[in-house]
Amino acid sequence: MQRYQSQTQYFKALMHPTRMAILDALREGEQCVCHMEAAFGLRQAHISQHLMVLRDAGLVADRREGWNIFYRVVRPEIYPVIDAMKAFSGEPDGNPFEAEIRSLRQTCPCPKCNPDDKDTEYS
Amino acid sequence: MQRYQSQTQYFKALMHPTRMAILDALREGEQCVCHMEAAFGLRQAHISQHLMVLRDAGLVADRREGWNIFYRVVRPEIYPVIDAMKAFSGEPDGNPFEAEIRSLRQTCPCPKCNPDDKDTEYS
DNA sequence: GAATAATATTCGAAAGATCGAATATTAATG
DNA sequence: CATTAATATTCGATCTTTCGAATATTATTC
Image 1 (cartoon, chains in turn green, red, brown, yellow):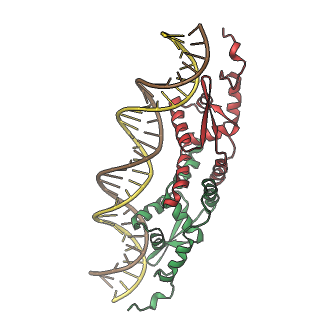
Image 2 (image 1 turned 180 degrees about the horizontal axis):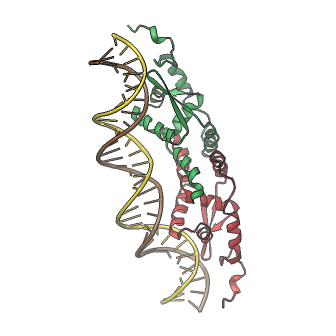
Image 3 (image 1 turned 30 degrees about the vertical axis):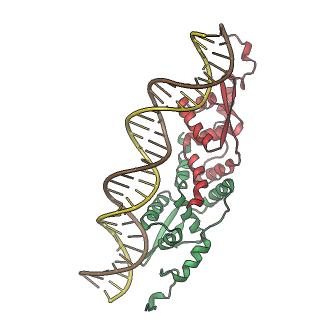
């Protein structure tokens, strides 16, 4: 059964709701961890742990920018697999967090969202 | 994360080498357990346990015919998902057990393989 | 350079998956 | 009806995954 090692490893990476949510959230391009924390309503450590699994699987990579760390998908060819599964299981395809993440851009203090905040004064 | 329940359940079903092998073996149509046992070189109980997982997931169903129980895929729409993963992970697609199972037909005593064996005399 | 913000890592307990061994079930045969 | 062939189920040990709590790391700011 050695021949199935690779395929099943990747299925294992896709096997958790939080990891599917992360991959969906990254459809729009890179996101910092704080975005996912807010969009999913999950604890920071929890998300970080699942990001580690995806990183170890070679599906995502990170990039630091000041305080924030941005994650991106490095093998977008994984999306056809996910989309095939969504079709199979009758879920609407695409990114269910799209609107949520877009609205985060208003208030998020991370440099990607609000590059000019450097000089902003808070009350 | 409730929304990912269904998708991840199915990924979980695909997550094991033996279960992938079973689904590949069933591409050619229904097979009895003895075929998979011979083709995979795995113990009977092991295969049976994984068949149970696939059955509980609603992917396969069984049918008895005399002594043998034949399994078949009841949701072949799962194959596009598997094929997408094979493409992703660089595996050749299709059923790697095709030749093996075909050759089993020569010697297998199950009714599907040799429907006329009823009257066959052994030494 | 001490404090802080964002994120990562470690640890430990609980839950789940795997797998072999043993046993149970079911239908066919004599 | 006892035996047998094919397959299923149960059990128990081991390994893996999950997840919260605590702690560590890294870059920034004052």
